Length: 113
Image 1 (cartoon, rainbow, N blue to C red):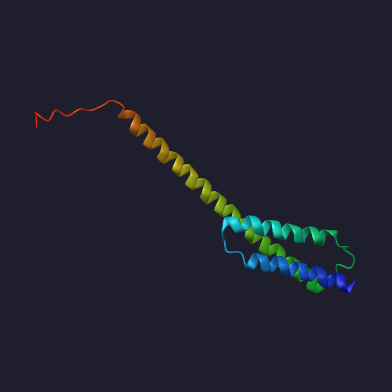
Image 2: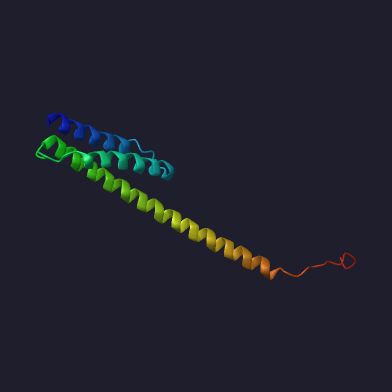
């Protein structure tokens, strides 16, 4: 039982370490989610008898808070990316409209100058 609790605490520490070591980039966030998901699956598969371990509960609360903060950062990044994508779409639309207006050929008579 004690070994089970120690292993659960160790797994939670690994999740916390993974989140704390995240570089803030979206590409590494996908890898981080995968790593933490594997660890969470291990935690779920372990028996949950005697959850009264205060160290485990404290680590669990810390992991939950860090995961919540991580998800908020990802949502903020998603919003920024969507805004940038929208701005790029508007720039493309303006550029296309500009070029459709200059569809006819323009010749300049050099003799007049």
